[in-house]
Image (cartoon, rainbow, N blue to C red; front, side, top):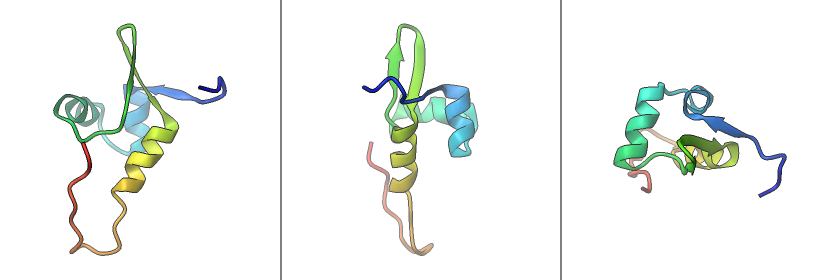
Length: 70
């Protein structure tokens, strides 16, 4: 992985995607959230994974419903 790729801790990642930290914690436990890495005890998210996860929820109308991939 290139060194210039920025990783965010859970609180920063939640802010980046517009969620509360507790919501991101829950998604990580139950599934359906963005990909993450464990570095020792730390949980970190690549910004590219956060962007990809957000894009996977993109819709063109409110009638579109598709469960996010786990």
